[in-house]
Length: 133
Image (tube, helix red, strand yellow):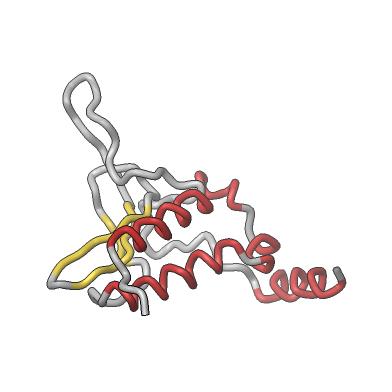
């Protein structure tokens, strides 16, 4: 069994950022005044207590959310979660339910607002369309 390293985690997170259309880096470069701001929407790896988790920038001040809502976990466990999350972003069903081009209109200042929730009737319609293909 291959050892999971930080590079493995970063590789999948880069793919998640690319697929979701979010900034690749958590923080911007310094502006003319020497100030840096958080890149809202960016996914990145956080670590503490010997564990790891997926975090997402929620505001320009650097506020984050714990994407999976779990504590810090071993790299191998997080790697599996990241693979599943990326798989969900790239699945055929996902593409039918939401346009990732709509992501910039998402208001990240509302931490409990989820732009990915779809009414059940619309979801059934998309599934029927995909089944007919």
